[in-house]
Amino acid sequence: MATRNGTEHDAPSWLVWAALWTVYIVWGSTYLAIRVTVETLPPLLAGGVRFLIAGAIVLGAIWIRKGRRAVRISRAELFSCVLIGGGLLMGGNGLVILAERTVPSSLAALLIAAVPLWIVLLRFISGDRVAGGTLIGVAVGFIGVAILVLPGDRPDGATLYGLGTCVLAALIWATSSFMSPRVQLPRDPFLSTGVQMLCGAGWLFFFGLLMGEGSGIDVSTFSGRSLFALGYLVVFGSLFAFTAYVWLLQNAPISKVATYAYVNPVIALVLGWLILSEEMNPPMLIGAAVIVTSVAFIVTLEGRAKRVEGAEAPPALTTPALTTSDPT
Image (cartoon, rainbow, N blue to C red; front, side, top):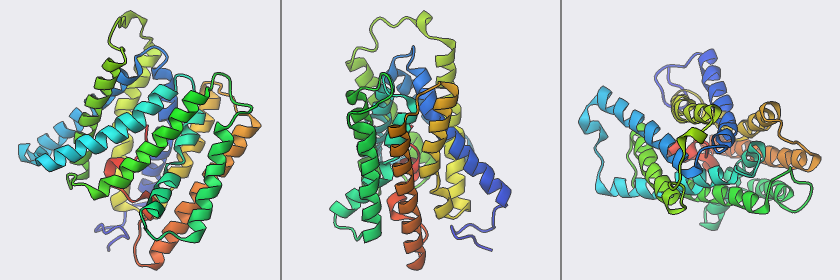
């Protein structure tokens, strides 16, 4: 019996929920891990190391399982991976890493949660037909972003520059996600992700060295918890959660998978408060409620509309493998 995503057999409910909670918790916790990583490690170079290792592992696994031919790509596909991987991992993830030197992990997660809002806005600007209710949800969501960014009772140390960097990261991630179906990427989602990770690592190393992160590096100043956080990002953030996510895309309704878009920031908010004692003041909680509610509304509305049309994937989140994953 086929599932709604076209697989041959229905996956056990417990396995679907186990994979979902893996995505919820791991991707929700990556913001906290980034915040700990940048305490003592050079931000962009650390990000480059993360995606270099993760990308090499992904491509190595494909090579071992399917042979050398399985990792071959065309020049056009490589160019697209350089472009999209750079936008996602340097423009998106890299800016988040830089921002979290001053912005609490929970606040960064809330601003990045606006990615689906930006994608809908880009669809509307490009001439795509977007329902009126979806546009209202987007407008409400951006009010939540404004509440978090505009001057007021911000958490200690959260600068306007850092907050603006998070907003820019969300916009670049959304733009790259929006563009990815319009360029020639490898059809295998794992191959596409692995190559994009390596290309993104190259961009992160380039800009990290350009910004002087390579000068005066003293390994003795790297704390054990920063190194552990970096390892966590490689193993769990870039490998385990992504594998669970791709499995979910093949074995569960996309309407259920898409719930990560509004569950992850809630997880990040709680973990930041619980583990790093990050501040949660009234404006932040109000902004969080507005953004999360608007994203949940959009995902639900778009999913319902596509089911009526006989499709399954909400357009606001329909992008290839890596681009649908969390910017961290």
